[in-house]
Image (cartoon, rainbow over all chains, first blue to last red; front, side, top):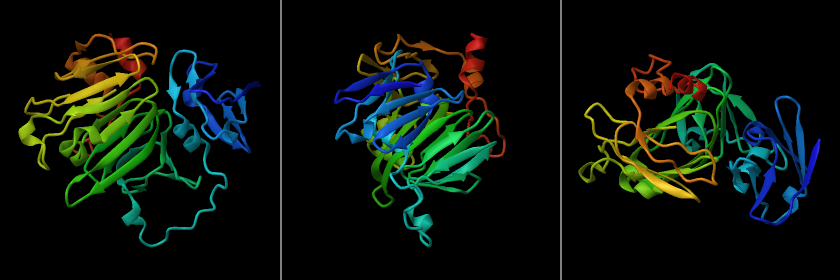
Length: 224
Length: 77
C-alpha cells in the first residue's frame, strides 16, 4: 500500500493515472483511503485533519477538487441523518427519466439506492453506473443530463426559483461520457450553470440566440 | 450539438491553462490535462458524434441520448 501524508498545499499528487478517478474513497478517521477495483490501496494520512485539505491530482493532470474528495468519502457517521419521510419529493432536485442497467445514487448520509425510472435525486447525490449502465435525469429547471456506462458524477448544487426561472446549478462529472441539454437556469443566466470535470470546466457562453433566452428558449446541448 | 432547427448555443470550455468557446454544431475540442489548455477546435462528423453519443434507448422518444464509452468512438477515428 502506498502511503502519502497530506499537507496544506493547493494539490497533492497521487500516483496511478486514472486510479484517482475510479477509486473508492473511504474515510478512516482523519485519513483518506483510496481503494482501486483491483485492490490497490493508497492511504493519505491526515487528509481530513486539515482545515483546508488539498485537491488531489493525478500525475497526468486530472484534478479532484477537495470538496469532491470530501463528498466521495462520505459523512463522518454514515446513515445517521434523520429520515426525510413525507415531503421527499419537495426536496428532490430532479427525477430519473430513464435508467438502463445498474445505476445508483449515494445520498449525503452515505446510503446507496438503486435508481429506477421516476426515482428522485437530491443535492449532493453521487450518481454511478456500471458497465452497460446509463441514466438520464431531468432536473427542476428542465436541464437534462445523461451519463453512460462506468460513469460517476456528483450533483453539487441546484437552486431554482420556478417563478423567476432563475437559480444556479453545478454538476461534477468525474468519469464517463455525458450529454446535457441546459435548462431554464442557463437560459436566463448562462453563467449560473457549470459542469466540472477533472481536466476542465464547461460553462454556457450563450444559450442560443438572445431572443430565445427565456423559458421557451432553445437550449444548449453539449456532450463530452 | 444542434437541435432540429440547426441553431446552436455556445459552450465555454476552460481550465487553468486556457479556454475555448464551442459555437458551431459538432465543434469539438480535446483536453487531456489541466497542464494543457483545450486543443484547437475541429468539427466532428455526425457519425463521430453519434458514435459517442449513441441513443441506446428508444423509450424516451429520442429525448435522451445515452453516451457510449469513449473507446468506441476513438476506435472509429
